[in-house]
Length: 283
Length: 290
Image (cartoon, rainbow over all chains, first blue to last red; front, side, top):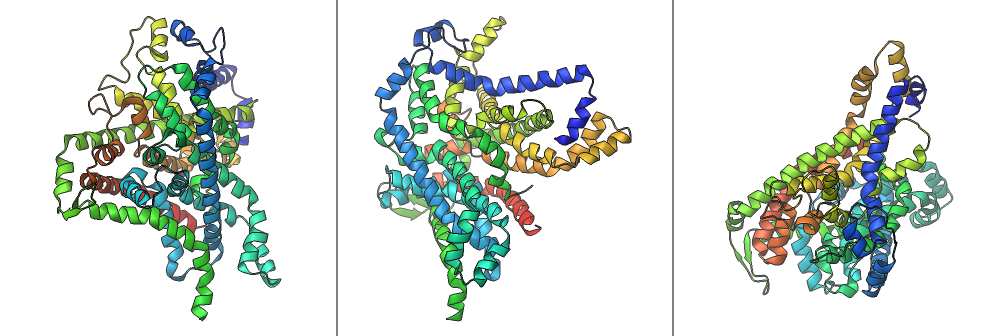
């Protein structure tokens, strides 16, 4: 960015105005639907009919939030929290040792490459292709319509993502720390817990955020696995409202707001760390 | 004994992940492969060998060919548009300006939303009595059947996907732009290169890896298209927005035809394997050359 800093100084005025106009247009196009959702959540149903273009209501109301609260959205928020936190905990505790081993240990017969390829292939394959057997498997194990079953199933998305992200963070830790601890007689487990864990804390935090978002927003497997509304996660709640006949836009958008606030809040964080998620630290 | 002590840590560290991925991915893929050659009775689980009958049935199904064409159409148009627009955005926002730190997180808000929430917003915007048509009416233009016109519906889905995921391509390409050495531009300008020449001969060649990465990731992701179809069109009108994912979902979970659903899954896996293997090959190569 500094490249252009010096250059932009000598830009003619017209060009700079043009640049600002384009930037503003892009920002408006990307933000308008989000702003519309915010306004619609507070717009009384009748006012929406009269002023379909208004971004903010003349008489803001909490009526929609009240309606969806009474329909039990609180329960679904709790379910979503439970499922995404459980998924994250499980993913990180599986992925961290694996990422450590991939970076530090020697594998026989290049099995590390085989494992990496498996991780990537799972990360990239369409989950619907394995949905039928996964569903029968969960049915046999009585894991359908259970939060725990969904946490396990989500590992198909989040475990490859976690391993791949953590790989880039573990790589950044100098091997000297390990060697020093080794000389002091620390075993593998001690090195992992007392040396690597604290050093990788920022990386684990970033990975946790990505896994939380992925689990919080996931729809397909939740649709297949959960059948009773008391166990629904938020995307399923949204789906319930959106496929209804005669949608109440205010209700739908207030559920949308509730489902989006946590992820929107961490947008700045994601923007900084996104590249770790799929490039393995490609700089 | 020695062998055991040498490899035991490895098994302990990687074993659990391998086990989980094996049960969740390898086993189901093999199961789908096997089931695709059988007639499976969903309720009893009874199976009889069917040879290639499932594949023949799927390939002869007009719904499947429509899904295939729709998926390819969506994948190509959406990912190319996202990368092109993302690149343009990256050029616009890579330069330092006042308030940049504040604006950057706002630019990626669409991709932070759950696809379902995103579809919910656009369900209104694309509705016949919704936001976009009200906007057109202000300019005296007639309303458009965004979702119920069979030839337009898939373009509306593309529009929604482009809105949601252009920020992703933007972030990837931006990282590429920012890693270019500023001195290159200074040198070029000293030699009298124009803005356009700088863009064509310095910027573009240097961000090719990021463009390729964005293209691969977006095409792999758009190929999976399911949520938006489910929430916006239900595959309709007719089968105008049916995709491979919704085809497998309908066959397997609405009509419980496990055999044909498995055959369709295998065909889908084969196509995505092409996309995936390019990506795996690229990523592994990158890991090795570090």
